Length: 334
Image 1 (cartoon, rainbow, N blue to C red):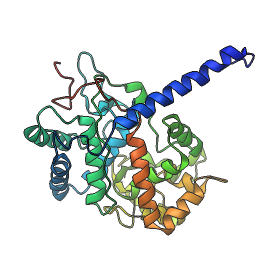
Image 2 (cartoon, rainbow, N blue to C red; image 1 turned 180 degrees about the horizontal axis):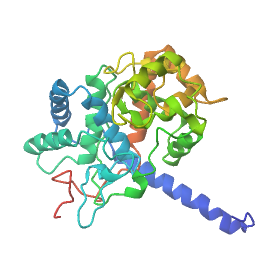
Image 3 (cartoon, helix red, strand yellow; image 1 turned 60 degrees about the horizontal axis):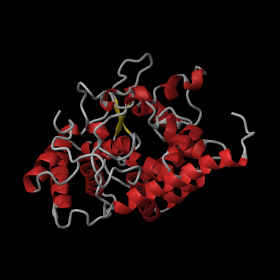
């Protein structure tokens, strides 16, 4: 693109950026932890109860619900679009490559929505249910608790193309930074939110190239701990067999939300390429953040809470925009 703009034309992008920033701040200001105090005061308790009930039979569900919130917010904002099924007017994000055959927890969201509707019909959005479910999931797994900002409304559209461009386990550090920056999130947010890989599972297909043919070299990823690699190779044999086999993202405390994700990175035991690159990329500005979080769980928790709130503020629909879906899977009236 040419750089020979006049002074008046070059000011347009700046003015647009200011307008967008003001719009973003205005939406953010309308979110409040007390949003449902008079209309559905026990909504947080209802969500927590359903999450904990689900956790008793599915230890993975808390990580899955947290991931759902992440995959919602990074696609046209935190608006519940990820929950929509395909219809005559909707192409569901559930079929996007990062989501298909891996994103889960939709039935638990349905259960939460049903319980909330019984208590407060037509009041609480599916987008806010995702935000509350993520907090309840982290808290129920030993992580921090926080006051969730509420007041989002639900989208009437989905965006398959954007869902196909979610942060990926195959992304380089610069690729991750670009995707986080595009939604207003910093390097600290990138590292803190990656820390959610302290619980949950990943399929062999998301990292098997690191075991056998990293970057088409025909060799393993040199940043991968050899003994850890040998363990992973047992569950993920070469040639693609078992590509959907599950592996703990955190091999030390796989079901607990703690700082061990970061100490694993220090031992070159990051499961995904996108994990280990936070520390092992030469000159990475994220490395010092990883080491800080590895040294102090308190520091990690404080930053994780801040980053979850930052992520939850990505382009929320508020006021009269969007709707309160009665069924999280479909637009009202469809």
